[in-house]
Image (cartoon, rainbow, N blue to C red; front, side):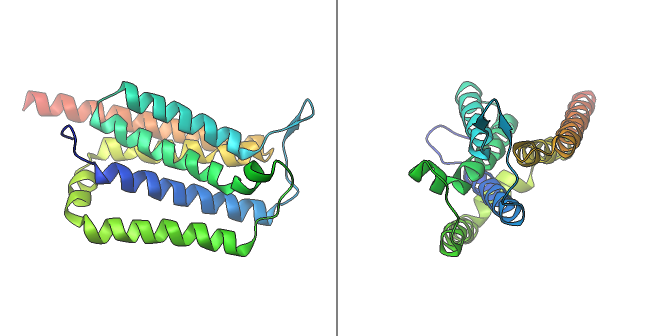
Length: 190
């Protein structure tokens, strides 16, 4: 990425991750409305997990200029934003809320319209930014999405499912790092 130029691939990854997290959280909380995690009298809403993801990914994105890691930060940032976005009603009212269908469709319409606009307007840039990703890097990103998805079962009290997802995601990301390291070693020897 050159200075001053927008990386549409990062924008696309962040928005796609936001969309996946938002609708996954919406579906889960609609199916399981009474599932809550309470510890010490504090109700842990999934916006706390999302806030942690956004803060960490944002900070790391500021501190790092490595292109492969920036894609990872974009995915984690978008996923965290989706978890926060799902609970925007709670954040605005500081009380109990029931998401209304129009709210879900409104967020969905914005997400899909923006994704479609990015795809239509910046197809060439997106191909360059996303399709040229090495296999190891793609494996790392998929692993991180799975690990980030573990926040939903953790936030809902399903510790075993959350632990399995987190460990599977971390393991897959580690495999991706190994594959990426081998690819770099092979390209240096050739």
